Image (cartoon, rainbow, N blue to C red; front, side, top):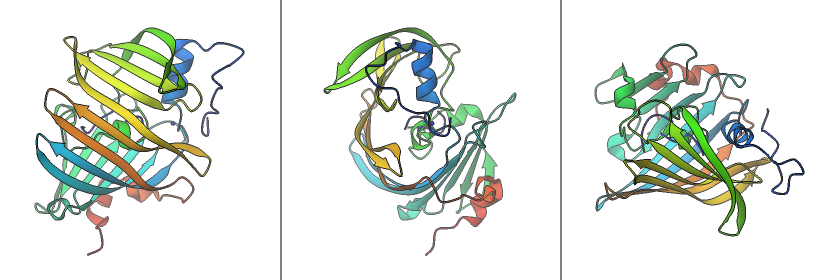
Length: 260
């Protein structure tokens, strides 16, 4: 997972879900819009645990995530690590921008400094984070062209299968296939392909209703070429408690220290 559309995703004050038997069939553009806008105008804070198998090296990471989208315009995500000890208080801040490149900031306590990450680094692995999924959205996804959509059934549930091609070169995928739940518009399976090879699969294993919001509670990510697997669990999430704007400033990375 990576810092980008690294977690998007896991977005109309919560777009009302369409029924699988809608009287008026949805177009592929409608489905994409409902998926991408599932949490528009929403905010949350969450505790997330990641169990990682990095080619045989196992590690568990715990973090706190704050997310909002400034009234449906620009998504903002702050991530602060609580565990393991060597990552404690490491902070990542993502600010979506309009008309200019997005901002990414990293705070490393050992260096006691904040640095801005260039897009090229943010597109690579940074502490195993993918904001596309941790933000439960897709604000950072690479722009795509929809190639087609079909209606299918996956694991007994009606889904829309979208196939998209990246509009501009990016290190994540050339082709993306997404199976989107027809009721909640949560992506239940995603595949990223490069040179006709699957380089990432993401599966939503559990969805729960939290404060009236359909929420992915467990997700599994697999990178077959790199032999990496991550199980992401949302241990707690609150969509109602207000979040101060100061959480989404670079200085918040310095101040948001996990208690000892």
